[in-house]
Image (cartoon, rainbow, N blue to C red; front, side, top):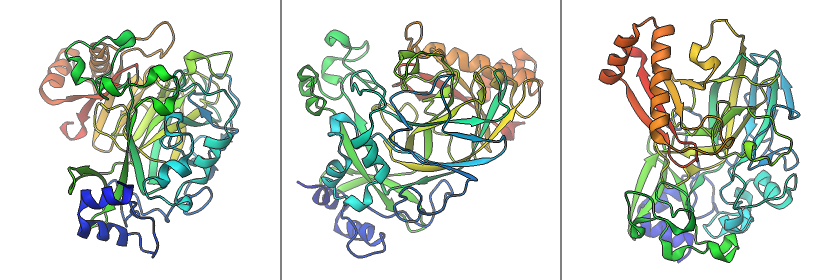
Length: 444
């Protein structure tokens, strides 16, 4: 059954025709849906497919994702050369590229892979095509490298180790009206462990994807048996965006989009080569990186401690929607055009939470978001994935913030967190797992 028929069966003919009509032009690709007038996050409608250099670009600076400038699977080091230099307080728009649809287990050919799901070549991003075909900065090893296409680094003048880089997310626009959710063998919340071991708490029959489909011994990623679910975007009556997945043959499940960047970071590790394990893009670190916190969409602020001159900011892993935990392995992945204001907060100055001078910290208009990681040095010195450690660090960072920034007695702050704050699992799939607190500003 082709992608068009699957979508018809899942949505029903009437809903399917409404979705196709939302594209607004005749001959639009069946199985994909145009972006609506306004997203749930408050972002305005993208101008069709946001190919590089087309449509609205709000930042003073503009960064594309070129094959010879991005890093596929690795983040910049503290000695990396920047692709852009900008002043503190200026804005930059970045065209990010999702790794889904271009990875080796999908054939490393986005035109062919998306065509199977009804997407025309003109609706596949040209920068994604170029990266899949032409990237050769580093050799690709699907079993070792991170999956993410990392864009950057950006040098922000005046940033020095000990400072904070304040990252204000001004917008996050979907570049295409579709995404992908993937589950891969040996990864996710229900993995088959090394040597075939079964994780504590589940049986072998409960591993996902099922053990019987595991083709990793072939050595060919295309035969690994990994699962990638194409996810079209649907427009609601009020212009809200939803991702759509099938529920049986004729029904569907729709969920609201919440575009955000899974990866925002500054250079943290010093490493001699581009593919040093310390630079792997999968685990988040004290420099941020693959932090995967779904609150970091439009109007949120992310504070990052600086470890290198110029901070060396980078982005990647664009998400259209993600539930806390990201249990299957990926979110609804899809390329975004994101605009940021980057501001240096000097050590000892106001303008950033005190915790942020040593640990990533997030903020939304409604809440403060202290963060905890299980292994904040990433792939260095071994790898720890203990969710309890991440929880304890999130609690300690929340206590430090309440005591030092809001003036609460520490014992009272501990009681407050237990009575009124929420601690949420950021993600459990990035080797280094994460927990974040949500402290409502309305309480204060």
